[in-house]
Image (cartoon, rainbow, N blue to C red; front, side, top):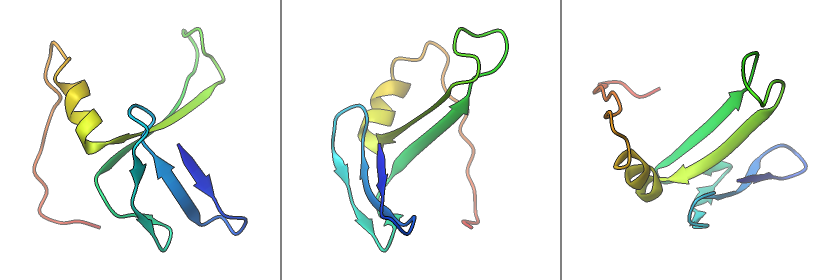
Length: 80
């Protein structure tokens, strides 16, 4: 969950799973977080809805451990 200041700068980020308040400084999350935003489209019961949530790194790892098929993981050498 994210809250923004009136100027659009990120003020607060909270893990939607465990409720942990994530470190935010100068409008940037300063720790590992997975931000998901998905627009549902045709063939779903949620057509036209946009869902968004944040997971801290610990909750993300716990979620991955429930998968029957592992997530694809690639290494990157450059961060933009």
